[in-house]
Length: 211
Image (cartoon, rainbow, N blue to C red; front, side, top):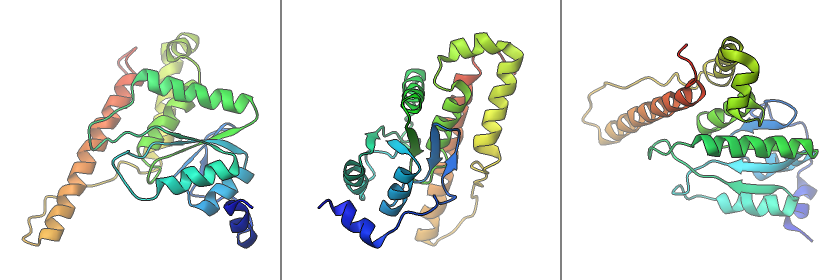
């Protein structure tokens, strides 16, 4: 008997948690899932998962990979870290968005997640939401400069600003407490890294026209 089946004897699938957001009929985005979440996601029709958590972060990623295998969900690790200055290329964005489209056309759904589902996941989801798996150049040509700019602004607002994913404040506090000092330092490092990543993303999707 599969271990996941034994788990399901004690956990009954129910409505998917509202921490997971539906982008469209093909894509769901959110934080890294627990086993119970994976069961609910499977029930929701998810057949493919992209995990964007950084490879250097240890923990229990193997549990998700193992559970996905048991559930028959395709698990894809695509790690990168804004803290390490790693940003996806246009080719990576397009390849992943195309994969979502192909999976959806074949009757499945895809989950995007990182740790919290806030920054890396938001960029990947926003790119897909803008292009729907089509080549970005073709999207720009078909919409034209004005409608493309409007669509890009709408997508950015939807996936970032309405979610308050960039509301982290820089800490200027001076302290002799070492725990507080390193906590503040890490907070500022995250703020600067995510802002740099966001600027990189904006440059990718707005490179056709300054608006």
